[in-house]
Length: 511
Image (cartoon, rainbow, N blue to C red; front, side, top):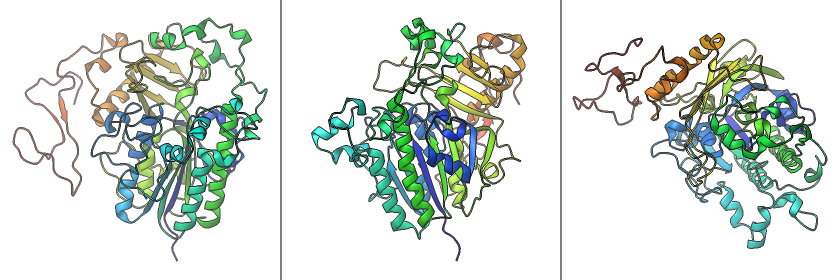
């Protein structure tokens, strides 16, 4: 009897890549994720598509960059017609359940409690569902840090993470003999850092190592970063102590709850593929910054990713993939696993080559991340901050459309202290990443593209502004069975989706 096609996709919120022990940080107590990495492949250079909760998830679950799916800031829903992975799978008879934080319905932080298309309503459980199970007193309690609670705090059963894990275990028992796709999306270790003992005191007295990034003065960096840092730039860094006791405690608690789910997978669905990642990181004072935002800094954009292959996409044991990877490839990977054709509108590709043979294949030489604003509802956090960034194994280019751009030498300056954007010695690296970034924006029909991204202060001799930009029209590729796009000039079905507008002079250097 052939094994079923089954995937368990697990994610946490705000887990930095260096908050998982197997990434080389033994002080981080994450035994369950470490064990998973020992059974599969650890991806050492994985990056968020936009390091903010909602937009990061929008890319993870649609396979389209936030600029193309509509949810490009917190509290903005996906555009009509944009499908998430469940909408591709459920019509094929695949049991699809989403349990946990969603953040893509355009509501407040907690969601609206309504199951979106493509997922099993019996298992839908966003944060509003969780809060509505609680009394008013317990609701307020659930939004407090563990350190502020009296009478011994809480037990595990009170938490969102534990209730998510319980539902996931129940789903696995029910659908173990079916093809299924299960999402387990925990809010932990995100604020308010609520977790039971022994996790609440597990890191008592622990201090994060103070790396050179904490001494960054942000000179020759974008003004937005200095505004973001604010009074933190005035701190005496020689006396700095970073003690995120509850943040790290919640991280280890989430690892424990993940372990409960994985143990059940091993018991009832041993041939399932298991994937773990996080949406984004957290600055924790590095570069004098807090939280996350328009940045490619390692502490913010670099996330963990671990994949244990399944029956239809096997992985070697205990291997490490050392090249850049991106969340944008997750949906194509899911579809590939279920033997479903990947639609042309998706922006990534299947990770199969680097799951099955991570030491011999390279999937991308460059991946991309972006930013628009932190949240539609907030006036703060810098407001509108357009960023597009290209990240390779050894360098990062960040274009801040309304501010100073950045180029980092990731190999020789791992703490990203020196901005090489105007350095002639780095011009070839910079310009290569720039061209790849512009090409990505065109290929993905980025609605925010324009001559401003091409014409930067550091390349005035190479490019000049043109009203017609690149001179092309780029229309949505129509998939078989979809309503065909019609040509504006003829009213007939389009046969050439990307074409040069011949009434304009073709810009120099284009083909």
